[in-house]
Length: 287
Image: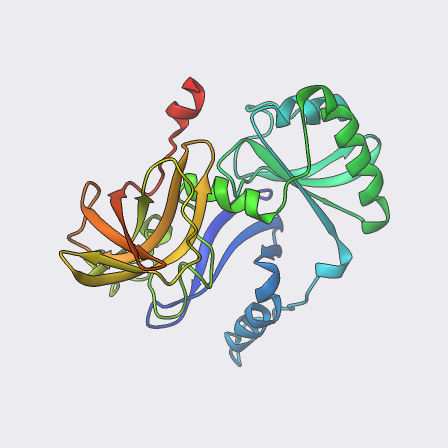
């Protein structure tokens, strides 16, 4: 793949279990940056080091967490905000999705990746920590007229679940393979030919109850005809679709449209199995 390409994928154990959920950017012909969750840096670096073999070409692995600050800017007007503080081309044609390159923001050099964890247009901006505060201030100033505001992790949870995005450690792990986690599109079939797309269980999205908030925290039982068929993983309220959302591994024959119940503090709440992404791009454009 050419320099500046960003790939979303998983690191797999030899049996297909998911060891990590990452993005990998090709910075140069022999230099790559792997981005993982903050809580998994040490374990993922250790896992990668275990994959090196005697007699193979030398590969240097190191952690760069402290070398960079990262600002995530996402939303339908993020391109308008970025265009106000850079002379670089950030159009869809000039800066395609899942690509990365250096740009200048208010005169500061920034490495920008057009990726998203919330399903909206946007960028991750990697910048020298000594300059990060100034870049942040320029972006906030430029975005004031567009209503830009800081968002915390629970905001990310709400948005990413509306788009069906997974969170490693909660929604998938070593005991799950990509097909079970709904990530079969990441699998290189010829390399992992022994992994069958036909699975007995599948991570599904549920809409629970109605528009009123339901306090779910993960681990709640999912029942079908009075029998426990799964337990909740990630949970969040989707403020765009106005629904309580949850993920659960369910028998593979329970496809979108299936009706189940979720036990929440002793109450049985009706729930519906739906498609992975309850908010589609078409729905976003119409809203």
